[in-house]
Length: 221
Image (cartoon, rainbow, N blue to C red; front, side):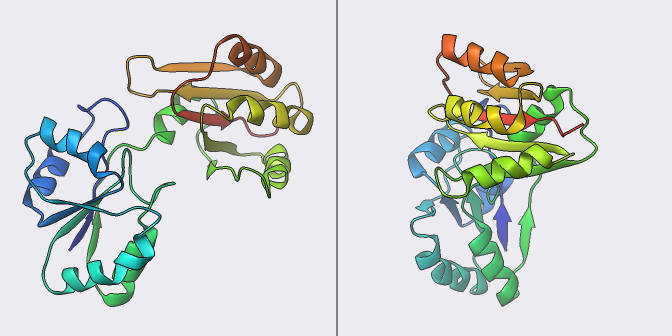
């Protein structure tokens, strides 16, 4: 059995009782960053052995992990925060497990874009999740697609590229398009800012972007 286990996106209390139990009971926990996950395990007195599993070694280690699962091991996969496979490593392993008939169970839990979407105040009946934009190639094409999208669009961005995103989006999406930007969700300095693109450019020019960001773009009217 492979368990996909969501972990807190910030506040360590945002983990389910079931997730804690599973992490204690499995034979092995695969972690994106073992140092980061070790903090969570220590907080909840979870003694389970950790092994590294990240985007740089996932293809190489996938076959060995599947062999362990087929041999009867129970393994949990976690990312640094949130739900694995959502803009994080994991789908390659899940795909391999499905192909080999290994049972996969995904626990419900934290995902950063859900609270950001709810807090946006936009129509949540339909939305498109993009994740992280490419740094260079294809970025402008995606922005043009967002400009025509009638559904809400959600994407992730680093603090170093939030202003770049807004400045690139302005001539494509226009001055009236409303955006909601959330940062540091569930943490002490959580903040959500609503406004047009020029208003948000002014805000983040005067206030240096810090933390992890979720950007929610209202659909085209």
